[in-house]
Every structure is written in C-alpha cells, then in structure tokens.
Length: 288
Image (cartoon, rainbow, N blue to C red; front, side):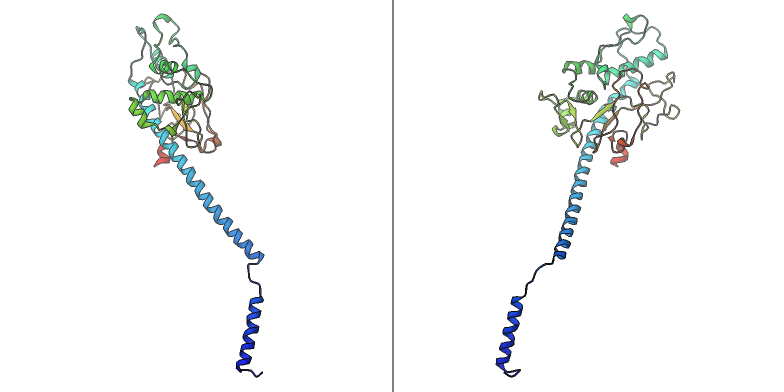
C-alpha cells in the first residue's frame, strides 16, 4: 500500500479514529480540588455578604425603634423642668433642697425603671408627714392597674413599654408609632409587655444613667449642670434617660435594681461588652 493512495489514507483515518475514541478524557483530582476550593470561596463570600446585610437590617430596625422611644420619653422628661410637683399640700416655705428632692421623687414615680419605683408614694421630707406626701403619679397608677410587672422579662424593659405606650397621645398614635414586630408578649396574656430589638431581645431602660459618659452626657457639673437643680445645691450634672439594646452579641450594660431617689447613687461604667450597644445617647452619630 503506497503512501498517498486512497487505500492508504482510509487506513490512516481508521487508525486515528480508533486511537481518539479509545483515549479517556476528564478532570484530574487536582483540577477537581481547585474547582471545589473556588466554589467554597464563592459560597463563603455570598454567605458573609448575606450575614452582613441581615445584621445591618437588624441594626437599622433597632435604631428606628429606639429613636421613636427617645422622642416619646424625652418629651415627657422635659416637663419635669417646668412642671408643677403634685403635692397633696404645699410646703409653706420649701428650701432649694426640698424642691430638688421633690422633683427627683416625682421623676422616680413618673418614670419608673425598677420594681422599687412601683410602690406607694414615699415621704418627701422628714417633718410633718401629713402635708408632704407626693400624690401617686398617673404613670405609676396605670402600670399597677395594668397588672404590675411580670417576672418573665426585665423590669426596666416592661416599665419602658408601659411608659411609652401610656405617653403616646392616643390609641391611633400608638398604632402608628409601634408595630407588632417591635413588641413581644412575655407573660402569655395576649398583650405585649416589652419592646424588642432586631435580635428579639428586650429594649432596656435606665432613668438615671449616672457615671456613663456618652455623646450627650459628659458627667461634668461645670460644663453640664443639672437642669433640675438651678441653684446647684445638689452638685450634680445633667442626666438623660438611657434607652438601649445590647446589640448583636446580646451583652452589655445592666440596670442596677436598687431603688433610690438619688440620681447619682447608682453609677455605671462602660465595658468592652457595651461597644456594640445601640442607644439613644449615640443615635445621632450612628444614624447620620
């Protein structure tokens, strides 16, 4: 069979076809491992992006709720600076110290954040007790009339819920302000008891967060004197109610359960656990 003849070309084609058809094709082990590594990296990147997105959504939800609560609570807080203290009988010649103690006692009962604040009205002064009792504030009365406080959630969180919903102007305002996914029923009676953050944890409340240096509270009596003590007899500084979430790690500042009419008796110090806490003292810095 001579090269170049039709018979020779047909024989070469047949051999080539058999060789190609008999060879095995596919991925080597190394190639498969490389592909798996790439797929794993892509999956990790997508998963991390989704996690970050979910965390950002939870944080935004928490910030929005705390902002609403801040507006309601601070609006009431400001009334103590100019409001008339509801004595059953007035002091004939009250001293500056008398006035300061009276407004602090009034604030304690009007804005409770612990079980001790929900008791009967206490004496404002030691002398002549018959004329120096403070009337039970509306807030305190309503909280007790609503069944008091359940043991299934932090007292401060339940006080905040009762206080904020009571201070809302009317039923329509409450509906517009707070949605169902921002509240939780903890005692199983079918009605909400607390506000919850984006991670399903209670929104916490401290009426007098003394010692806690924040964006709006510098704990300095010289630069920020106590607005409720214009004569400076108490040597205190300006305090602002703290409304906060423990954030994604669910750890952070814990309210002191001890009841007292002295705003500076219980002091707080921030720790590393508080770094991711979301609160109304820091909202402007985080939301803008």
